[in-house]
Amino acid sequence: MAGMSKILLSLLLLFALTGCSDNKNADSGMDNQASERSNKRGPGAEKAEKEALKRKFSTRPVPVSTAAVERGRLDAYYASTATLTAVEEAVVVARTNGIVEAIFVEEGILVNKGQALAQLDTRRLSLEVERTQTNLDSLQRAFNRAEQLFKRNMISPDAHDQARFNLEREQASLALQLHDLEEATIKAPIDGVITLRHIKLGNTLTPNTPAFELKRADIVEAVLNVPEKELSKLKPNQLAKVRIDALEQAEFIGYIDRVSPQIDADSGTVRVTVKLENELDLLKPGMFARVEVLFDSHENALLVAREAIIMQRDKQRVFMVKEGLAVVQSVTTGYLMGDLIEVVAGLSEGDQVVVRGQSSLREGTSVRVVVN
Image (tube, helix red, strand yellow):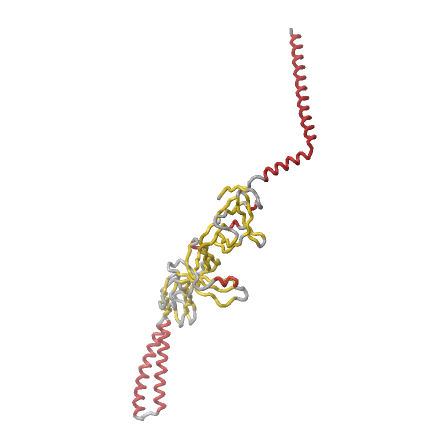
């Protein structure tokens, strides 16, 4: 019985091995047939398939974004940058000798013309004034006596003239001392804000020693250096918009106050001064400003997105969309205003022009508008 089992197991193993061999031969035959078919097709057939695939994709519409040509107001601005400056400024100096006895103002304080800023010691000057006043009283009495004696012919004309000379000389000395006494009080020469204090209590000052610096605060200026080729656009009283970076792009309105009659030979520029009111005291000298001067306006201009314009050498073109196809159109442009540009010739109101996707287009390309 055990012998019969071994014989049956051997036969089963033999059948299994025979079946695997047949399957491998069948698979090998199929691979050989596929290889033979590929060799029969050759490289020409593969190239034809690639060309057909290329034509299939080339005829697909190119996705583009378009915008319509519209009419609207266009304001033309000349743009530049400048640093704000004070319309008036002064360095206040000591006019006489003295020790600083009191300081009445500090930096940032708004002062008026003639207001006291500091006081020098005046004791010596006051004593000199008292002495001169005493001498003057004496010389006045001497001159009065000489006047009476001269009328009676009791003194010579020279003696009379000498008495008058002595009196007038002392009067001049008193006037000078009173002037020095007044100048011991340092005063503001203009209305403005104290921007810098040079002196401290106890400092000894001499004439022309800087004491304070102040600048007028209610009006500031922006000085533009304009290229001479742009000079014809700018004239006095033109409106100017000024944005200040330090004030989070806050906008202020000013105007051109003056245009220099002279062109700088080294830089080829002209000084154009824009004046700004500073009622809220937000503008400070030294701030960086972006200035736009309005020099022209067109009320009913044709406007199109600036990105629609394609520059090709000296020509300007756009792609229009007509009946699903891209059409090249030459245009003539005018002023720029932000993201818009004026079209002087070549387009009409309502025309659809491509603003994105132009790089893949040429005349007659099929297009598909995805965003208007």
